[in-house]
Amino acid sequence: KEDYNMEMEMKICQSCGMPMKEDQYGTNKDGSANSKYCCYCYKDGEFAQKCSMEEMVDFCAPFEVEGGRCKTLEEAKAGLMAYFPTLERWKE
Image 1 (cartoon, rainbow, N blue to C red):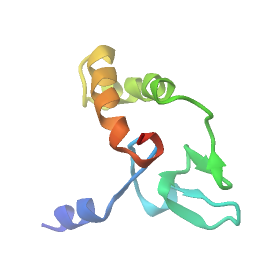
Image 2 (cartoon, rainbow, N blue to C red):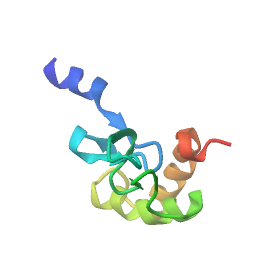
Image 3 (cartoon, helix red, strand yellow):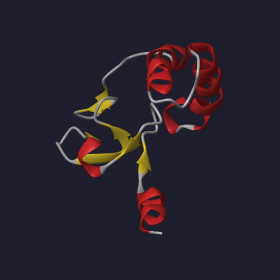
Image 4 (cartoon, helix red, strand yellow):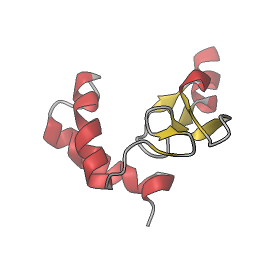
């Protein structure tokens, strides 16, 4: 039951989809925490990677396989291509 509550409160990076703990939040220009994006995607008020959604998918797919969430890179890429458009950074 405790785990369930933690899951509910966990933020998801709106750029790469990574579940974030507070110490993984990105930073705004003034150095304050930004709970919308992770520290890998967002630093000092701007995106760390100037990339397209497809480039982000290519970058993130190996982590999906490594983490055991997908069996192949192709499966990971297909899943991320479907998921990323739901994230704030990639919404049309």
